[in-house]
Amino acid sequence: MRLLFKQRFFSWFDSYDIYNEDQKPVFTVKGQLSWGHRLLIYDALDTHVGTVQEKVLSFLPQFHLFEGEEYIGCIRKEFSFLRPKFTLDCDDWEVNGKIMEWDYTINSASRGEIARISKELLHLTDTYVLDIRAPADALRVLMVVLAIDAEKCSRNS
Image 1 (cartoon, rainbow, N blue to C red):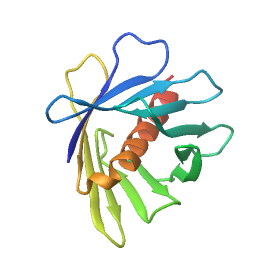
Image 2: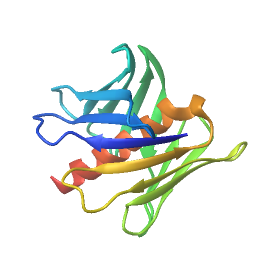
Image 3: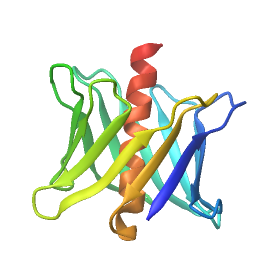
Image 4: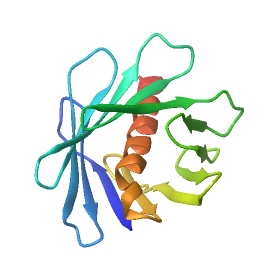
């Protein structure tokens, strides 16, 4: 399954549209005013399906993940040299980035490769391609990408 993740050009808060390969909307992400990033995820029927909430005042960046209203875990940035690395405490997933922080892989100790994420260059806004092995993992992969993008945004502000 391939998803295209595009940040909206004119938006006061973080807002994204996520499309499938046929350019049909799959998810919409709406940023909400809060201390730290708070990103609400809606499906194509405008039903709230998830939230990514930044935990402020932590040594390394952390984001709480919710499916619907249920807390499912946290994604944490790990201390690493040159190559960004994140772990999830709700799965056995590990996220590893390349030096330029444009490409990532999500791997599972029990299931192998979950997804590949690549940033497309030469766009006015952040645009990512998410290649996901199992469609059932799409929401969690999207949450990972949102957390990584929010972490980079916070660092560069």
